[in-house]
Length: 156
Image 1 (cartoon, rainbow, N blue to C red):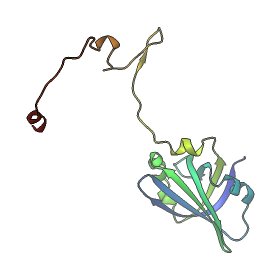
Image 2: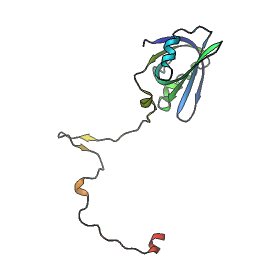
Image 3: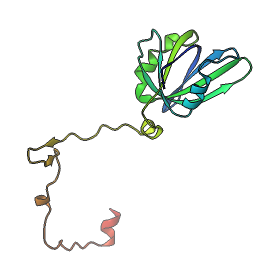
Image 4: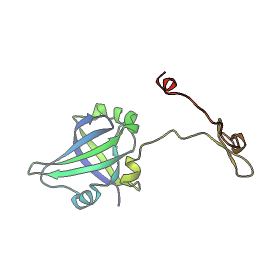
């Protein structure tokens, strides 16, 4: 799908715990690219506001609603793109040029929480070393010692 260019009113940015909602209004009853927008709704889109420092921003195209005066486009942006969204605040409440295109990212990938991961080293023989990891040789062998205690020890 080619990039869609729309002249819109950047109506608002609304923040909650995990996402930010961006709302854009297209004025009038004629909507260019309406078929492409309807197909894109419900998927992940890459949006960009012209002349902003935010750059391209992956967002869930949450909904498209039409009435007799305007078409409302709503997008959910994840919290990990917070700095990019901050760069959009000066544009809220004004007319902007919005560029949209389909993303290759799925909804599941978009909603997956990010994690820091674990640092590791891969040795030349293909084995992996993780700092602080216990080796198989470190595991004690033999029968475990029998431990006895009375009920008073459990309470203390």
